[in-house]
Structures are given as C-alpha cells and as structure tokens.
Length: 123
Image (cartoon, rainbow, N blue to C red; front, side, top):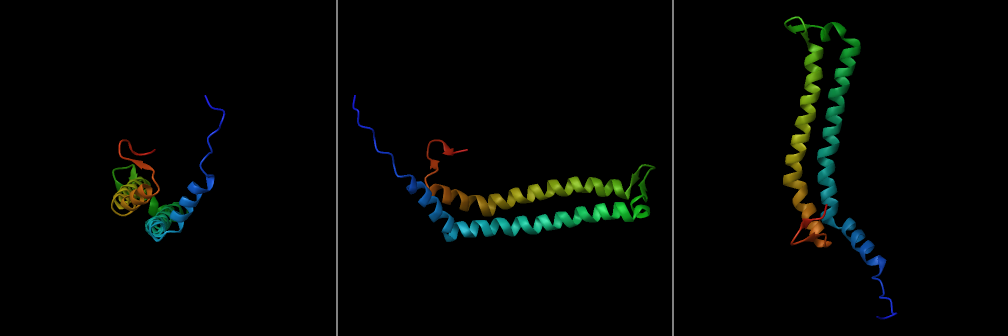
C-alpha cells in the first residue's frame, strides 16, 4: 500500500472540451436548427391559444353557436382543437428532432466522449 495519492486530472480539461464544443460551428448550427423550429412553433401556438381565449371572452355569440346536437358548439370544438394542436406540435417536433437535431447531437456527444460502444448514450 502506498501513501502517494494519485494526481487528479486537471479540472480544466473537461471544461475546456465543453467550451470548445459550445463554440464549434456544428454546435452553433444545432442550436440554430432547434430555435428555427421551437420559436416559430411557440409563436404559432400562442397566437392560436390567444385567439381561442379572445373569442371566448369577446365573441360569445359566435363561440356559443351550436354545431351538432344541443351541446356541441364552436367553443367546445376550439377547446378540443387545442389538445389536437398540442399533440400535433409534439409529433412534428419528434420527427424534426429525429431528422435534424439528433444526428448532430449524437456526433457532438461522440466527439466529447459521452458515448460508449457497449452502453450507448449516457442518460
């Protein structure tokens, strides 16, 4: 048994690696690709939701228009379409990420050594 303590690896090496990746063109492109989907989709959903709220508050006659039977009106359909649009956006994002974001993120992760061949990505 030895009393010598092993010298730890410099803490800067990992930090420097991450900073180098953050400054890389590939990472900048990944962030740009993410933002090019997230920001427009967020604005579109917010406007769609605001339309629903504004119509519910100020166009009560229109929102109360009966469509089917005695209980199905425009407001109910708009409310249900909020759920549909949420799931649609999630599905679209999943497809977009699979095609555009994940391959680049996997390459970056492999470059900094966070993927092992035996276990796949750490999670």
